[in-house]
Amino acid sequence: MRLPLRPALRADRSERRLPERQPERQPESQAERRKADMSTVPAEAEAEILTELRRLRARVPQLTGALAASVDGLVLAQDSAATEAETVAALTAAALGVAQRLSDSTGQGVFRELLVRGEHGYVATYAAGEAAVLTLLAEPRVNVGRLHLEARRSSLRIADLIDHSLGRRGPGSPPT
Image (cartoon, rainbow, N blue to C red):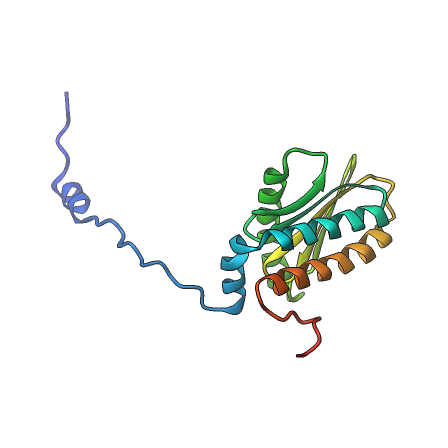
């Protein structure tokens, strides 16, 4: 047996409207434009980024993996035996969002890096410009100071490679 609805409830239900679809917003800020351009990084830039990842792994032998990704979680290049690069990139994007909000909310400024220490090693993420990140996997015996030093250098190099490939001058580039 069905009970009749009260008239007030029926009126509420009929007045509901679906939210109007918002038109696609064009990227406004320079950072948003860079994020939108990440899908167009040329193959030559990917090869140079991969070379930088390999150099980094040679300088820090305790690294077990290196990944460059867009802040949206798209893999740009990887040097790792792990086959879950897309998963790591997506998780990095999620962690990056939280880290950025935490850094901003606590007045610490723009996100620079994130270090996670697990039972079997480290996961370190470094900003590589405004549109990319460098994520590293390291053994538990890694020298964390050396890891930071080398990763910061590599993240700057990757940011410059991305900026150059997209036709932009990066902050570390000499004026023309």
